[in-house]
Amino acid sequence: MVMERIYLTWHDVDMLIDKLLPQFTHSFDALLMITRGGIVPGGILAEALDIRYVLTAAVRFPDTEGVEKRFAWPTFLQFPEDALLENRRVLIVDDVWDDGRTIMTVKGRVEQAGAMPELAVLHYKPTRSLFPKNKPDYFAAITDKWVVYPWELRRGGEMIRPITPSPL
Image (cartoon, rainbow, N blue to C red; front, side, top):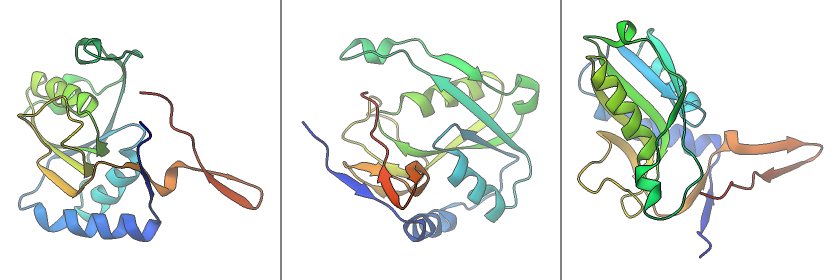
């Protein structure tokens, strides 16, 4: 099954951020961006919310299919030391909650470090989530489409073409 795609512009991203910002009713001690998709929205939110304590997390899952996908053990390529998270209210940011594995894995590790995490994404896909009892604390839109963000476009010559997504 080929998933329908939507291609966003930078203006679309601005509109999504504008939908997220009013949802934040308290401040955060830190912002943790999940690479790669969370870097751009995380940076924008850090600036808009005046969060100066900004960290990154990089998580990689092995290529798996079906039931094994839920049980695949991640590799943390980069993650802040526990001391940088402990006793902090941390906003974890990614671009999309697709199956939820990455952001929920990061959330668990942040909780393990003694922090209080909250989750924010631009797009939430509840029909694809492996965590039906969980959802992001903050999201700008719900979709079931493949979202192509403006930072995911290949630039070269006079042509801009979408990057072909790798198989899940």
